[in-house]
Length: 111
Length: 117
Image 1: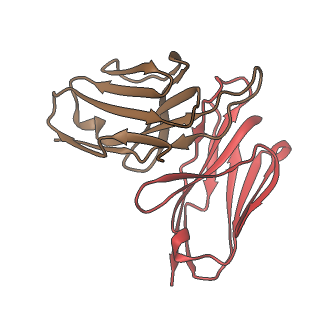
Image 2: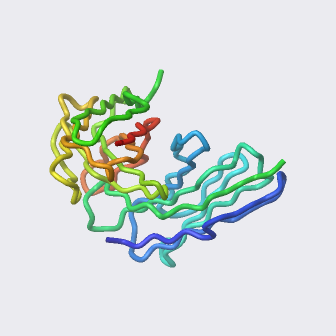
């Protein structure tokens, strides 16, 4: 299967700081999603972004499919941004819907 | 107005027991999934169903058996529970993509925290 590597594994920020999370993948993809798992365990889909750039409020994401990476930007971070951020991909040729998850970036935002 | 719901939220049971987890989605999606999240938070797909048909069946012990009575429901039955089955189990759903296209965004339920003693 496809390899998905996320960095950094842990990130600690002060409220108001900006951050960039990275997701590298080892094969061509036709599906890439970013998820946020909050401290209560709920998984929330942030972006469906197999290519290009999207923005949603303070969050934005960019996927450069030809170079096999995606970036998640968090600006003016808030304590509610804390949690684990996962990147998940589906590579071309795999069964539709079969997502491979990275191991996540644990983000802690202090007030 | 919950999109993907799971019951129960917590399940504590003894080794050797049989248990079921239920999942329902009201999004009108055609595809449903079961994922397992281990103690290190690694998420891995177990099964997926599309319109009640099994599509993905990962290498999981055959003690795990999914059942989809209709496309809005996907249940997971686990026989002879073992200590290593302790994990969080997530149900998810997505709208079926058109022919040749990848399925789109997956929406996750709140998870079922299973603890086997």
